[in-house]
Image (cartoon, rainbow, N blue to C red; front, side):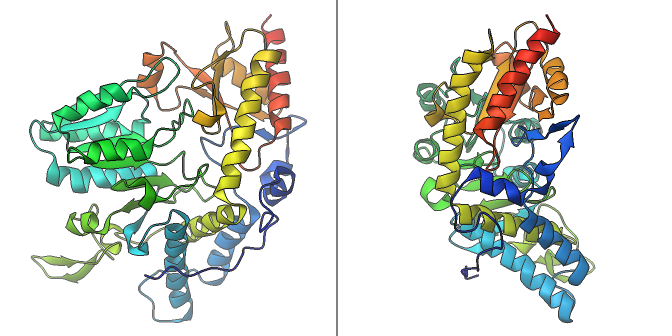
Amino acid sequence: MAIQTEPAANSAAATRGLDPAVVRRDFPILEQVINGHPLIYLDSASTSQKPQVVLDAIDTYYREYNANVHRGIYTIGEKATAEYERARAKVARFINAPDAHEVVFTRNATEAINLVAYSWGRQNINRGDAIVLTEMEHHANLVPWQLLVQERDGDLEFIPVTDDGILRLEVFEVLLKLRPKLVAFTHVSNTLGTINPVREMVEMAHAVGALVLVDGAQAVPHVPVDVQELGADFYAFSGHKMLAPMGSGALWARRELLEAMPPFLSGGEMIREVHLRRSDFNDIPWKFEAGTPAVGDAIGLGVAAEYLGEIGMANVREHERDLVGYALAQLPARVPGIELYGPMSADLRGGVVPFNVPGIHPHDVAQVLDRFGIAVRAGHHCTMPLHERLDLAATARASFQVYSTRADIDALCDGLVEVQRVFG
């Protein structure tokens, strides 16, 4: 599928780079008041807010051409199919995939990783085969591999992290002597914000014949991602973290891998011919998209990719580097005793800042902050093994997006001082 150039979306961000004061106008949810205070949304690592152009695209689909794709030979059915495949091309262009047919639509990064675990993994992992992960993985890039090796009698090995959240590549080098079949790791840690050296790790893994899966859920929304330059074999990400609807996401994989993999789910759409005792499967990517897809959500994902592309991912990265640097400086200066985790350099981390206020449980911190309209995440962030490694029961986490500002961080600092006052 050729990847065509698309016209600019009608948004305040289009062609203007990243001025958060301008970008915020595109997000209607940020106009509301919570508990008498303007909403300060600092939980974008959990899910991002959606710009008006994405909301409009979904609304237009359901109002004007709601129909199933790849089926109806009538006007709105053909338009639905065209827009669905056009969204695939937009996503492919956003991550610089060489071929849009290598982009499989999924519900989220979790489903994308499970697709690889079930389809590729059950064909290729056998007794004694090793898979190498890291101690910082989200449960979505851990539990599927646990289930796989339990079923196939394989082994899991883990790259440890330092106390400040950096992967120990010298241990990775030793683990590669086991000649693992697969190395799977996160591009950007959802808890610590650590940006891992993907290209270097891919080259190390390929040198011993391992394939590489990268969990890009926290990278695609925040840093420039070029799957060809990174060199990985599988790259998974969610739409809802990159300004797109919940229920949207994608797996990119090299064509030859997808063509060799059996279907993940079976039923309608993923077949070419069906007989009573056998079926012939469809071409990629539709071989992996059984049943009626989330058409409106996929269209919204394409619009979100286009929106971020107009801002420019280099601009997004620079904006978040500024916010992280500001937060790392302001929080310890203004909130006595606060504990921060992860790399202490904004150059080494994405837009995530986990913290604890000594003597106050993160859930209590989050509840008091909510009184002032400030939304942060509290808990283990689906990284329980990482919290165990750091000897932490839980953390609070502030995370940023294109609509976040230094003023949000100032409000967070003031709110945390109030938290300390409330708890004495």
